[in-house]
Length: 248
Ligand SMILES: Nc1ncnc2c1ncn2[C@@H]1O[C@H](COP(=O)(O)OP(=O)(O)OP(=O)(O)O)[C@@H](O)[C@H]1O
Image 1 (tube, rainbow, N blue to C red):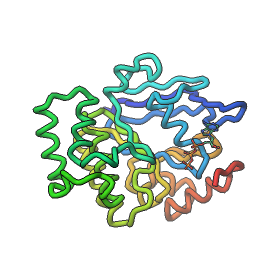
Image 2 (cartoon, rainbow, N blue to C red):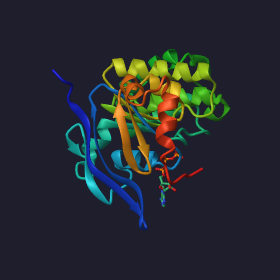
Image 3 (cartoon, protein in one colour):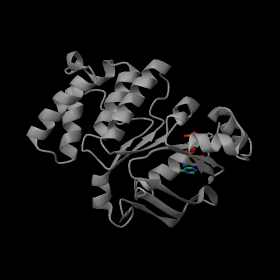
Image 4 (cartoon, rainbow, N blue to C red):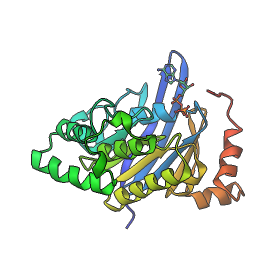
């Protein structure tokens, strides 16, 4: 049996003062998928993702998450999703433990749940010794892993990650992806934007946006076959070259 769709979009569009940032995109993401959302700078990824999270209202079109309308059933949506933005939302002047507790509180979790989950997280991230340190003092890679962990603290059905691994070395990025796989194995659907093509290879399916439209969507292997390419880098370059707008 084919997995059910956890995200559906129909002609989802966002215009800013006459400029169409996201242009009638229609696609589905299956439950449990690791879905890569690629595109050159300015292609419209963040704008599309913000609409999917309910943070930005579309000009037209429709999106559902786990069957709920993103703009009409907002309470249900909040419980179903986690979000980690590029400028992730940890509080630098709070400790690691305080940050975890804060996010647990936002999602209305009980003290017992927060306590147990905090211990699990600190152990999983191997930062037990840093629990009482200010987040500001942590290396970027650790902050990213912590931000991801708090984004899925409430065990959402889906987590949106906007360039979660920017600016860190390949080993740290690989460690981050291990966390992604662990979350995916627990049944959390992953929706991730990245500029790193090795990360695109780790995804089950990848879409590539060009000038606000979804130009291609398939498995990494399928994309390489279609574009007669040996690497995702090559696929990406072939498509990104078509772009007429650039935001660099
Ligand atoms: N609030 C806004 N007002 C006007 N234009 C905007 C706004 N937000 C985004 N844009 C424009 O919409 C286009 C798409 O931007 P978006 O940030 O979604 O791209 P992106 O694919 O996420 O790029 P990047 O990889 O650089 O993050 C860009 O040209 C951007 O300048």
